[in-house]
Image (cartoon, rainbow, N blue to C red; front, side, top):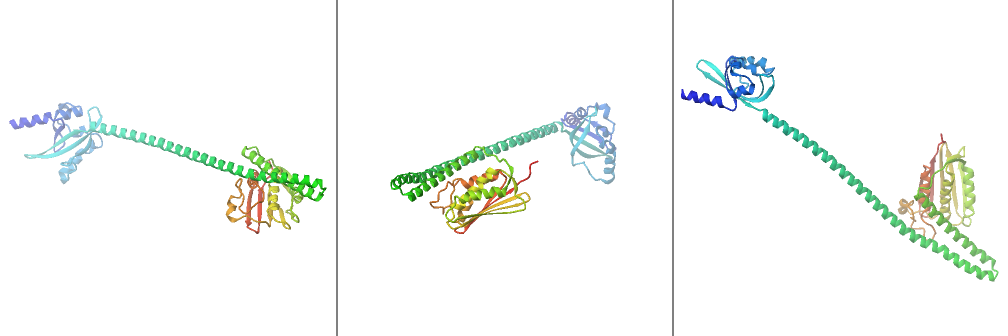
Length: 398
């Protein structure tokens, strides 16, 4: 008797719910902890089918669970335990851990369910999940911000590197400019000074031939200085963004013949500038001044780097809206190793020797052609000759 009272006291004071049912599913006993969990009084549930404490679909299927076990002996939950959902008197549900044991007592079976409320645990799990998701979001957000900052730093680094590189190139250009200018200006100025002195000497002797010889040298030196200054001015305007292409319709044949005639006057002894045009039409829509500057520069180079008694070919090809201009010489040519730097400012090939030049002309030509949406290419072989080709695609303005 004392042992029965002790067992009953343990059941009644257990912190987990304990329910006993018979083999038909009717509640025989329920302890206070279980009553509190489900919100019922003892009188309301004792004798009721235990399914009253279950939400659908378990409510409807519970009797079949017991019947199946009684018939087959196959255990689904007895002695195993699992997480299930209970339904309170007010209709709300909550999770709990259910362990079921089977007790055979005299001539019948009793099932005891041990109920451990998981509500607090689930709430904590949800909070942890929420915190985890929030933390993951913040980490993702911070990571995105960090990546953005890193990208911005990389961009800033690249920009700074580009600026440093630009500054380095500028310093190199300045150094090359000072070196080139001091040399290129000194040579014609010395020639002018010497020729002027000799003119005074030959004038007193009335030596007309030598006077004319040295006045020719003065003119040539002045022309070289003028070319250098024009190159500097053109480069300055290009760097300042002051040069724009202003296209107009003009006759390419008349344009080219005039240039050929003008350049023939500046050619060396027995040099011949030959111009030919191919095409059924001659009208082009380009910037005449920029194109003239480019062609004169190329022909001047052909004259400068070719010997006496040579021919310079100057050809134009016009088909539909494409204009091709070739300037070909049989001069000293350009070394293969120098050709990739050909259009860099202040660059001069290694085989130019004492032939005067600023190294700016081809850079200006390329930039002028670029303003007209054209292209310039070069084919050259040392001691064989050089061909420059200009290609333009122009369209009539709308």
